Image (cartoon, rainbow, N blue to C red):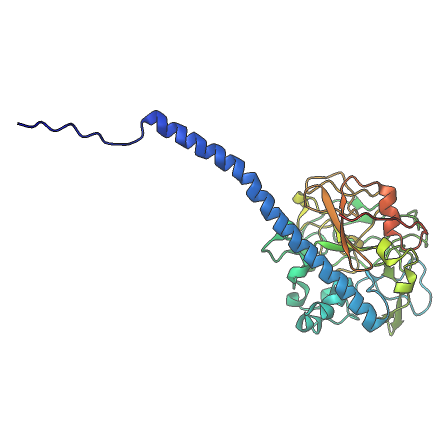
Length: 346
């Protein structure tokens, strides 16, 4: 009688199973940073493409209108006759819509009316090109132009010393209106602080005083309504050269202040300068990422690790380390300080 050999069932012992699980865990741990890095690289490339489109749109605006889009209308401290209006009208982001293949949205804007008097659907429209995917991928962010209705916000101050009071007014513009509006992640380069910030009529935040490419301008008014800018920044105004002057940049918004007034207020709000513009130079360093709560409200800054992107007036896009010297940034933000910077490729 033949006696068969006992069958041996192949399988893992408990120890072997634990070893395999440990190896898989290590591999996943090694792979995850690489996946995250690849995703960030893709988001960064999308952001760069958005900025290139904004630069091209600004050139198309200049070709059609003869000047770069103004950041906003602002009559200044002591406006002359015929320039008393402004301060509450749409910003440069509304002006660029026709040149960003957003004709239908652009036709619903009346640049001579206060931005908050437009329909909610118009105010809250945000094309993808306005958004950095590292910050707001897949969202249609909306914020308020002041503290939301019924909220008394704290008094905050800009570098100029002028207060921003929820529901009140800065003293330099009509009282705030708590209207909703779409948000954006890119800001015009208003220049540096050299025009001053001491409460004088020559300070940078008043119409016509900015040293950058996208500045607040004084309006020409008819029956109390602005119909064209009195100040115009043209390509010929970029004395330092188009390759040496900032046009747009990524604007700093701390992660805990997303969609919060005043750091992240509606991009079309022409009353509130930080809504659509930023400055650079001594006193205004680049933010060190989304958790930098010490950077100023008017600083540029991104959510890309270690770098912030800018569109130069020639339409090129360059990245700058968050530790870039503020004097260099100021030279690039000022369109006519006669300090030309030789930039290396990146």
